[in-house]
Image (cartoon, rainbow, N blue to C red):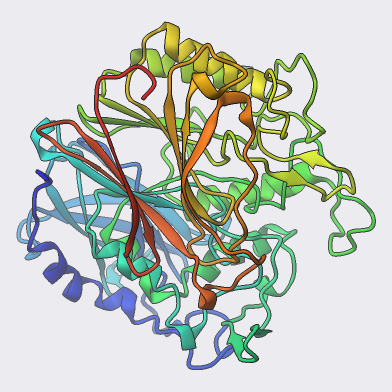
Length: 530
């Protein structure tokens, strides 16, 4: 394995994360609704820092202040910060919930970047708070350096939040130990529709205890409540430390807004939790909070695109195609229509994906999907047997949203696009599916793999049924037999992708929360599909 070692990275983190680590978990459930900022007259950055959408020469740095402040970022090649380069970021105020991002550009390729964020008093720039530091690697243009990244999704779902007795979100500690180049979060970064209570009963008679906040006491409807959902996860010290060490590539799915939502939906009157019944209104507020709390290049203020879907070039070995299977989809239905031009991606996003795949010269093309292709995901939120994802359980010719996926798979085959691998989360178990035309009703495609991981910290659920339209074979699965198994019961997962710089081989490892490897699959480069 040719991935380059960086022995000095953790030593700098031990010292540089001291400021963000000052946010300790409250000693008991409900003991703290938010970090206790010391209003000393100097701005504080107690929510930590994070970076996102890092390229070969740029990256976004995020921070949140406890009051109005000017964001300043300093970068250095070493942890000493001698002769730092200074970046003047935005003024942080109430209009963005005191969050902000600064784009760093002109960075050296394939290098470790040390940075620290200072928050300055807008009226007196000499008055700055305690700096909060982090580090990240820019993308290397040298194939021999290889690429390693992790993916997962589904955080604080089904009422399972930050449990101090359990150690909080310990899965982030295990992920950090693998020293990845970046982390791909495949959606459900929050559960805006999932209130978190102080306690929950466990099957063995014991009690799960959550840290609670006011915003997590009900479903999110207002902008302030959506913002509070994102802040909730940042109460966890493992997550803040991980954010300061590992850049992210973030996408969203349904729970950033509401379970199984689609554009134009109206919430049933029987769901009395909601006073705002227009899902498009909720989605607009959620999207704004999402853009405020994550460094996403296409959503930052002034970005022309204003979208979640994008492609991140990670050097000669890898391009990551981030899909948005939520914003442009049609309404959930039995999904058995014989004509479906809109599908789950929308026509514009589908054509974008085709163009970008055709233009890609990377050895591997990871398609980051927030929902699986061949796993049946039902939707009964409207009292009808609708379908939430792509597959509807009919193993015959493509129907409904499968028509759009068939079009894409056919395109990949006939354009001879090599090295496509699908990664997803959403279903709260981990599995590996191989799709093969010889087993399928629709045969005009080349074989490919789909790997599923998650949850990070949420309820675990039994394995989903397979739909035979594209010929999937479940090569591996680990899932509980009961529904909504708590993190204390296990079944929390993340995945690892390791691309060797010499051979070009791509190795996928499905891992448990403590890092234990459950399944390994090695893929060879240069094959159409995969």
